[in-house]
Length: 452
Image 1 (cartoon, rainbow, N blue to C red):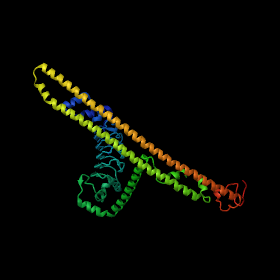
Image 2 (spheres, helix red, strand yellow; image 1 turned 45 degrees about the horizontal axis):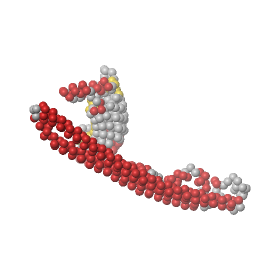
Image 3 (cartoon, helix red, strand yellow; image 1 turned 30 degrees about the vertical axis):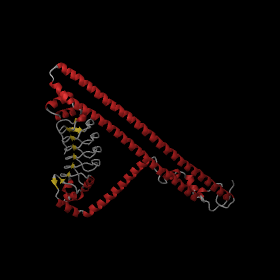
Image 4 (tube, rainbow, N blue to C red; image 1 turned 90 degrees about the vertical axis):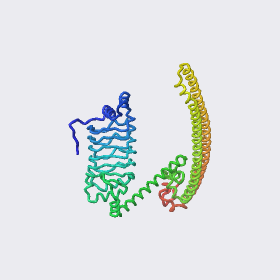
């Protein structure tokens, strides 16, 4: 499978690329013009670089519009250098020395991929190719039939080639693929008939049902995670993330070791729970208020965008009407100029038409200035409304946070009262055995009253 040629391995430099683009460019008059003016790499849609003894894929970053790339029959060992080819639809890397599938993460529009006759032993790293319809992996080293299950995620896949791999020698090869890839239409360039698919489904029914169950669980978990991420983004946009529960309160006491010790003192646990409940209620009030205010800001933004679009559309319609009237007025006049034989009359009419064109230009510029003034007024009004909404939001949230501070101060006062009460009992010897060891002061060892 290793292909060696008499010629030395070549590098994909500008000279090779220019030559390839020139040879594949337009012919005749268009081709001559392209050669004179030069062809921009960014405009090239198809590139053929087969049988060039290329060792490494490189220097393709300029082909940002490329849709079809042919790199077959070279000595390429690694898939790389394709990051910028995001519009690629068709890629041929067959008959090379590639050992692993990689470097395809940005090719989200790829539909047809050929890796025929390489050294690939595992099907993976194709996750980004959500539009993949045709996959050719024949004549490689793929030996594990279970590896085919990976391809179930590609819902658009209709054609698959695996002939020439060790997996194709398995007696259950076709049945297995029909069962696990039920949407496949062609396998190894042959159409799969419905009868074989039915037999395959019955043969592998139990394992397929189990697999579907696991896939559904994974899908449900992914959907839940996605919903949580989207919800969190909404909360962030409203500036109230993590305020719809106990997160803020818990984070305040996560690293408070001494505070957790105090919670074991008589009466402190109940006091802390009451403080937590009231604190969380305030957080929930901020959360609900923040979401409502965010809805108002979104409504204001939608209204602003609608006003802008209406103004632009109305202005464009007026401009089109002016241009249409101008064209209607002067269409016959242009014919009259062509038929006029007197040079003086032609010059007079041209002068008149030039004045009319200048007048049209001034009218269109006036419309543009009117649009700019209208948009400026709309923007200023939107800015004032948003500032008012944000100011009101900040003011009310500050008021609610002030309630949190008052609640905290009240909690500390009550905590201090409990601490003083406990201390007095300790001094009097009325509270000895009940005091937890982890909060007992060295001044008051167990079994003695100690001294202040």
